[in-house]
Structure formats: structure tokens, C-alpha cells
Length: 231
Image 1 (tube, rainbow, N blue to C red):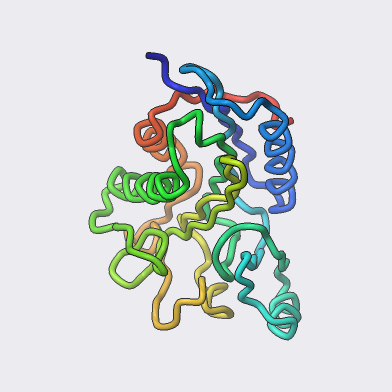
Image 2: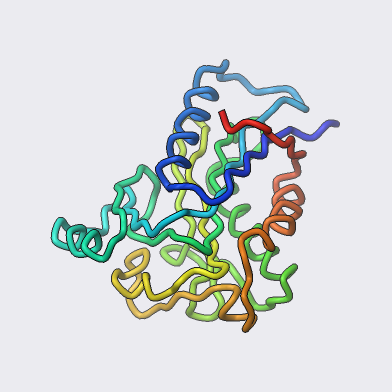
């Protein structure tokens, strides 16, 4: 049986708005296709990968930022956006791997809860491939991947009519001081970390991309087809 295919779109370092724009185009593309179970080997959607070009704070469907907080964060020089993903406020910026799978879950034989667990498993596997042991997923409300009480990967997704958007943000060499201006994901008393901090060396997004793709293919049981043009 052929594995479902997923288009791999690597954007490099781009403004966060560019990622959202491409995500919306893929969403419209998948939503326009017939809503039936797809045969084996059919394309299931796209895997959008990038590194944010600048600092961005995002709020999810549950909010997380008051107008006063939004003004304060913008005064720091960061962009602030309200998104349609689950969860509360978090930070995206340079040194972070953003992974937005825009997928028709039916074509992968997955349900939403399985998709979230698969994203967590990808981040855990990446940590292992980088030689970092002890990373694990935790039960809600501690969604994401953790090393003790330090979050290394945040996860927030949206799903409508079986089609997913948004995804995960994994700290590679992120400037973690940006997280000090919010309560990340609304979780008081927890911290954040990065691959660079834990491994005591500089780890770039480019370095982790190949092992992340290995993990994604293994866990989602799919093939990846490189997309030359993000359009």
C-alpha cells in the first residue's frame, strides 16, 4: 500500500505574515477538494516550514493578551497577532522552527487528538536525534514538549472539516528573554528552554531541519514531495 504524500514547502526565514498567507492558500485549496475518503497514495496536503524573520507574539482562540498587554509588547518592537489556533499567548521569533502542517486528516487516517500527539512525537524524536534525552509530552493543559518543567516546543492547532492548520514552534536558538514579557500559554510557574541552551552549543533551524523531516515521515507514515514554489 502506497503511503500518502505531503508537499514539503521550506520558506526559509520569512515574516510570520508570509507563513499565514501561504497557510490560508493551502487551506482554501484543500477545502475546495471533494470531502471524501481519499485512496492510498493521494496527496494529503502540505508541510509548511519556516523560521520567523522577526519577533511576534500570538494569541490563540482562548485569548491571552489584553489591549494593554498588546500595546506594551508592540512597544518592545514586536508584532502582535490574534490567530485561529488553540491555546493562549506565545512567542515566535528568529532561531525557532515553525511547522504548520495543512493536512486533510482523513487522508492520513488520523483524528485531531492523534494529530496533536503526532506533532508532540515529532518534537520528542527530534530532541532524541539531537542527543537530548528526557524530552516528553505532558497531559493538558501542558500541551507541547517539555524537559522537566521547561517547555522546548509549543503546540497549537486548528481543525475544521478534518483539515488542520497551525502546528508547532520548537526553540532552537531562540532569544528566550522575549518569553519573559508574557505568561507563555498561560502556564504560571513553568519555564521555557531551547536546544541551544540544553545542549550548550548554538543549534540553528537549518541544522534541525533534516532530522525533523526524518521524524515527520516516520511518525506520519507519509512521503514528502519537495515543492519548488511556495505558491
